[in-house]
Length: 213
Image (cartoon, rainbow, N blue to C red; front, side, top):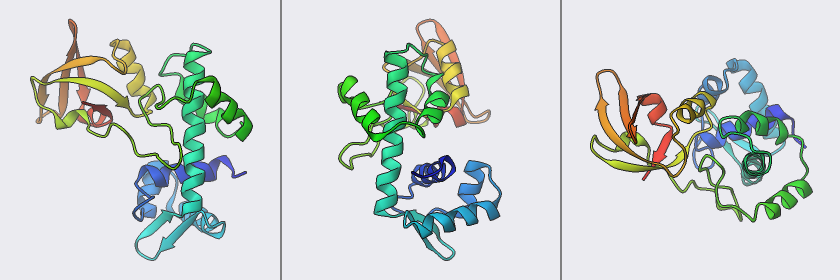
């Protein structure tokens, strides 16, 4: 079994579309908040185990072996999130960090039993797809910024960003909710959305992590 650190690198590579393109060490360094020499050292270790391939001046990409392993990690994580919410009654903003810890410690048998218990779900509590049979592309990829003031949209997926999830929860906004885009302010880079009588202000950065249709 890989270490937690190695698995975090694999997920970071896939997050940056490392299944189809090379990802620079600089991007990984910034995303993981790890110094570049340490990133280079870890990439070398992953390449030795044939989980990634590298190309000079291009970066790193997942191999088929690496992709399969990464999808297994994501499946574990997202099933655990569902279990924590549906069975243990966690709130959606609480489950990400808990699942981050548990995903490295459960067996394949546990995951299979969990999948069956949850009736083979399609998505996690945040709307992210649960990989199956090498099908892993997200179902919802259009973010809030692609729409205009006056549009009604339905919240379908939110990135696992704890502060954002806590904020949305405080405004009673969750997956499946319809909201009105009241205004988009390019100068201050904020979006105002409304659910019921409540108006919520989102930075462009946060709005880019909310996927709607």
